[in-house]
Length: 256
Ligand code: PGA
Image 1 (tube, helix red, strand yellow):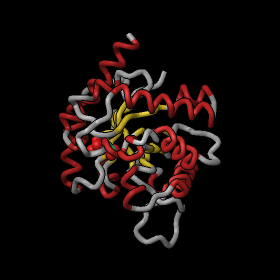
Image 2: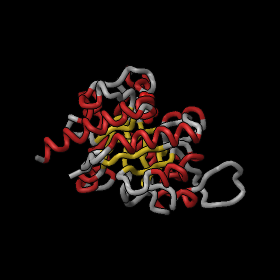
Image 3: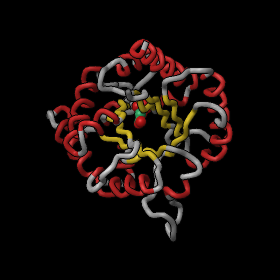
């Protein structure tokens, strides 16, 4: 069965010292919570230090972006290769990247290929805008984003998908559990068509967009949803820990 995952996307928050403080709080609070993958994605500048601080714990590490070239004259960029001995995951195609940094479907596709090539596991984000949602175009938009992002990629090799409706990100206005479950079910059917039934049963698909300690269970309880990608609430150790605990309780109930 799919192991649930709670991933914290810290975005452009935390100085190095704040990151150290936050990771220490999370590590202390986590104790022995098993059967849930806990991933934190701090800014690049903190990855190496955080990596040392989580050694010996079950916390896993991800980056928030990459450039698709392996190395060279690309001032200011970070390559997948540079991340390979630092972290296991990388967020790709986040709507903020698509919106502010022109990460098109084609660029997202190149980044996913580059990540998979060095065995980094992409957390591919997809999701529709409010107008698109209101116009009933969610299925068309999400299907299009998946097709473009995964074009020509034969094996998913641990890739994770996060469904993040743009209208729910950072707005405090989360989707409902049913809405998210429906779209994530659709994403899984897309994976059947693009890959196979087996790939669709194996792939983890998360919900993201205003997930907090107060609403996490509503999402994680849904049959198609394998966890959450958490932004704002992941910057507060107690919120993040509560979300992880809720996921562990649901998992233990289902497996026990
Ligand atoms: P949010 O962000 O939880 O702050 O809405 C989620 C995300 O962008 O990954």
